[in-house]
Length: 392
Ligand code: PLP
Image 1 (cartoon, rainbow, N blue to C red):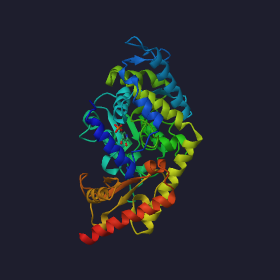
Image 2: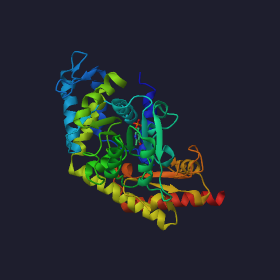
Image 3: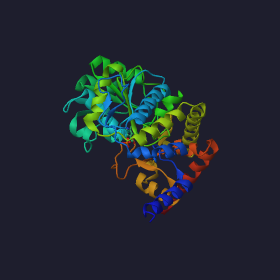
Image 4: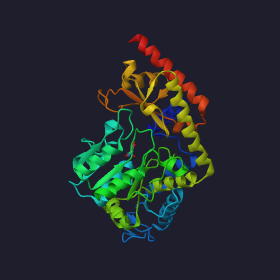
């Protein structure tokens, strides 16, 4: 009997085929990634690490791991190639959130301090939100953005000196400008804190050379593999070789059990793809498209946070329209355009309502969209918003 589940999968497949997908954290993976993730590797238990692991954590707790050992090692080697680095890599985190949990616990203990970007200003839940493990386990302090929405590096330094955190975190879910990793790392050195980068959103740009690299500067780097990296859903942790044993122990047995070998296979295919010239060209196009679309909104009189973008996303500030991000997201959904409501810096509305929406170009660029297509979609979004304003 065919499972009922496949009806929903087919409906979702069609939704993905027909909608204009502008969620900045989403993308469309290749058939090869799908094949790897949907493979018999899902049947295999392999707690532990491959025998070649350069840390004391090597060896598995199960028999029959000969092929997954080779696969996991291959995956690790490839990710070093993607970022041209000799940092140690752990490919087992099930998600970006699990990667961050293990990364924190590799060098911190509960009660230690972290200085990060607030969720309301563009950070992620796992960067210290009170409702998340990060906000519950650690003593959080947050640096601010200035009136235009740029990270205020003076404030980072002031807060670092004031709160003396054990770890300073750079990285965001809704920040459209270059992160100054060199400046962050200097401040971390000044106060004797670890420097961690969560490059989940911009990892593809780092791989393609469209954003400065944190390698060489950060002690620990986490990422997801499913946003601009255009791969299977999952997480990775990179660290300086001297932290390798701590990071491996924090992932397994610290915070996870058996790794998802089917997902590790998907991550390996993702890495193979990210090493190609075609992928680098794709990322260059993502950035060109994002600049073109944000410019078009500016031309139409909209407020874009920071006045533009350097990466794959931007925030549209809807304050002047009187409309909430929630209402615009819902109305656009009815028009087959998918994006998400998002707080703008110093937002006076709640995260459930918001005064902005976040727009990203990674997914539709995978579908072949160029600058002219994104300019056309900006016009379509503008038309929907104008209609909403008239009805309000
Ligand atoms: N870090 C950042 C900066 C993110 O934007 C996200 C997800 O959006 C995550 C971590 C968490 O990733 P996941 O949803 O895989 O747990």
